[in-house]
Length: 275
Image (tube, rainbow, N blue to C red):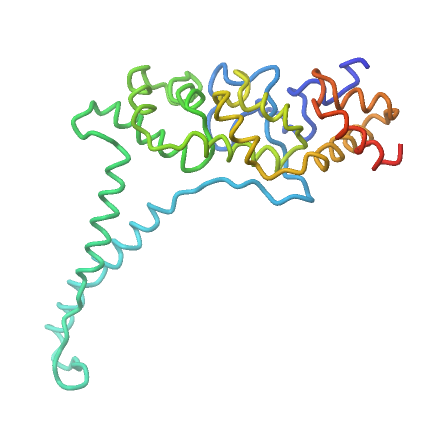
């Protein structure tokens, strides 16, 4: 089959890719130079039959703002109002009760301590601490491997930190790289049809996610996926766009240059399509 007629043989030309969008570019963040290219499969629009992607988000800043509002938003004003207004009514029993904000202040202190912890050693150079803070921000919003996060921090198209600052961030950021790999695998499965082997390739590829072999293996072993269902979906996509024969479809689904499903997975997919 000619690759020019096969929209799935070239991962850089995925259905649903938006005009001007670089393949593999993470939404909301600048693309890192050299991290995308042939072989990378960018996440597409969520498949209707599957739930949407699970991007992580940090609620720490919102929590701090709420705590600040509670701790500082009214204490002084309320006292001034009571002093200036002699008609203020005391609580039942005739004894005015002072508001206890110690619990809120303790929460504020904890929240601020947690925020400062994102910047690491206060004696480290400012740029090093900024790189660490940026690394934590990235990890709170999406999944990164150690190598790809380093690329993003140093890239001319990313954050442009010097190598030593980026390395400080990578060495000190709090991350479970196995969990990051699993989260990335889940996002891919929720947006596209993947075989286990091709998902592993995408997670480890220098043009993909750059996880280590061990991290990628952990991810594909633990991701919740029905590989037979993935094969059916992939087969249906080919059939809807190209109208292939059953034999050609099996070849495409099992090829090392195609989808890398097992023969059994490909055969049951073709059978389910009635071919």
